Length: 96
Image (cartoon, rainbow, N blue to C red; front, top):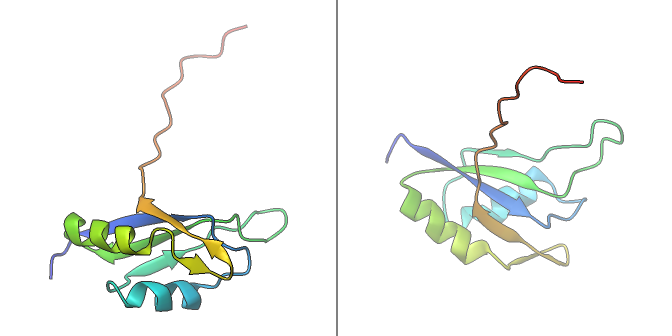
């Protein structure tokens, strides 16, 4: 097994979905390293998406994403794709 870990983005996630439900869904296609379902800091409610880390190589993770994209969970069709790294643009000094 490769030491690489690939992170997948799961969109359109039902607010009531749990990490256990996602782990069970993904287990049919790949091993799961970790699952992160971000919560809104003010309400504590799920933000409607998750990040699922799976072992590489990337081709295997892509195959799992393609197999799970469009699958239904709690009545919603999931959107599964490779997670994009979020980069903030460097900003110059504040200008009036």
